Length: 381
Figure 1 (tube, rainbow, N blue to C red):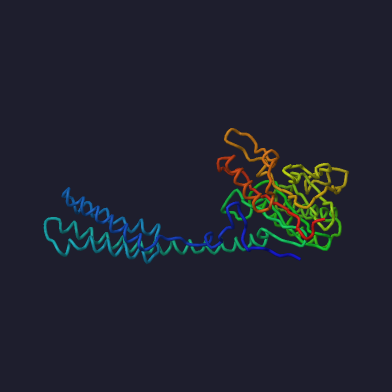
Figure 2: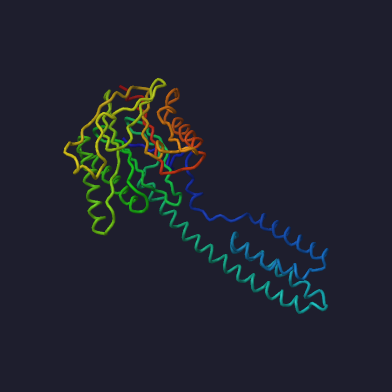
């Protein structure tokens, strides 16, 4: 029923390498050796030319400090040992008026070198703790937001998810895809606000969707379950003195039938791309966001629209529609979608995200979630 195609978050330029995200980076030992020798040679030559060798050799004492900030403890120890050797050598091999200066310089070299190695060890320990924390966060992200693309018996869903703050692997935008006996149910949404409180709401809504999607036979009952989850979260938030939040959301159902169901809760309507034409669909019955149902009397209802074979549905958050250019213009999504011949999910997402990055000159202003839903060929009506 539910078959993930690859275990990595998809992006416009390919999947994210989680090993890169959770790795301590240090320069190659060869590069460290070359840089150390080049710096030493420059100081020695300059000292011989100016006759101030002792003063300039003192500059080498600080070289291990730079190594401690960038290199591994072993590399830092290598640099410290080399600097100590270069500074101590004149004390052993030469005598003269400045012998005391050279002895003091040698002692400073050994002392700073030792402190540099200790500093490198402390830095690596802190970075290791951060790496373990980021590894845990990456694992949590894969549990909260399923890696894309996703394939069910009804649809192929591909997309991109990019939180505004890169250090937070999960933002306020959410999505999920669940294969159920009533067809494939797709959720995309956007939690009001930013920060950890918004992420907590996002986790609750995604969890409620996964549970209710398998339990509720109708889409409206599913949306009611999401509404209840948001209300409960706000109740708990109120007890902690935190502000209440609402969630804009869109729930889509694709099955073997000709038509597709959608319930919009204050969210951007989906766009149907077919034969080079982009059309907003399911926007006739727009409802209030999740968490605000008690403000209106009308219940949420389902909209139906045709989803023909060869067509693609595009779902997105306002991180796409409200992306701005340098002069403040909003991204013209419907205009940019028109005329596209190749609507395969992966290529559509890649070209669209590249286009919005060009439009904004690479400046991301909000969390971004974009999904492309394409009907499975063997289930096309």
